[in-house]
Image (cartoon, rainbow, N blue to C red; front, side):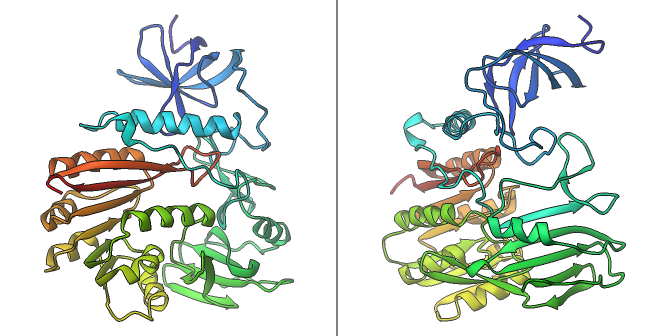
Amino acid sequence: MDIKSGQISVKIEKPIYGGEFLARLPDHRPVFVSFVLPDEIVDIQVTQNKKGYARAALVNIVQQSKKRINPPCKYFSQCGGCHYQHMEYADQLKLKQQVVLEQFSRVPGFSEQILKNIIPSPNELHYRNNVQFSINENGKLGFQAFGANQIIAIDDCLLPGEQILQTWKMLDLEQFPGLKRIHIREGLQEEIMLILESDNFVEIPSLELDVPVSVVHSSDVGKIVMAGEDHLIYQVKDQFFHVSAESFFQVNISQAEKMIDLICEYLTTKGKTFLELYCGVGLFTRFLADRFELIYAVEESSSACDDFAINLDMYDHINLYVGSVKDIVPQLDIHPEAILLDPPRAGIDPKSMESILAYKAQKIVYVSCDVSTLSRDLKRLLDGGYHLVEITPFDMFPQTFHIECIALLVQNDK
């Protein structure tokens, strides 16, 4: 069959990282398909035809898996936010465990015993304390469409918390030129913040508030607080965190608490010097502050650093550096016994990795939101004199392909 001219019937083999599933074309090239399940026989239409692989859209399910369920969201497969709503949560966890295992199997010296069982989220739905809406050409709130550069208007979502959903339903914001995105965040005691994001400053929109919320307008020229405060307070375990409108914070608090437990378990021994890179507002730092005599933290976001200074104000042995890791770390004349890394999705750049390895810290704890870049960086760390003790995956984002991991490494001679 001419692949360009019509539909092809294939058998789905296995999941791969990124939410897609692998099958084989008649010419044996891999083809990647979304919203299917292993062992299903499906009709597909090729949408991207490359020399070494192809991508295809699902047209029809010929032979359905017994594990397939009706997705709870009416926008599933139209909206690009979720990838696994067509399977039970227990099966999502098994699938993610399989994907992680395959990713790390390419790391030299990795064995299946190193990978721990994925930590499930207590909430499969309504777990997010932060949601970002885009605005379509008609001024309606929505999300990025799957496989298309357009915004589909939606009137419901199963991932945000209930208070966010209620605020969204009541939201009546006059459309104004330049408005691109609206964030709704929920903090302590159901406090809500709206963040209106524009490409440029044009005109402050008219706003009618029937409920007490904080509203911040953010544009290229700066931030304007239109109502309430410029920050929210979050509670994680027994600690409280000041988080500004521009600062990142974990969207699934219950899972963040489990991650903190594991990091504290890895760094339980009291030590002299500790280095934390990409420290954000100080979430992990706060729970490790009493375990080291000297702490050095590095963060590029100025708003996160302002929040960090507030959240860790009670300590005088913590040194915070504002700037990029690759610029600051080579200048630090310190000898950390342990290093905590929590980089963005792109992982650690070569210059920063070189500086990290030069410290020869006894222990490195790596928090990652992308298993592919973690796999790459683990190879660099192993080549640099470390061995991998264990990796624990966390399902921070149920219904999606995203997987958080924490890896523990120690020096080879330790």
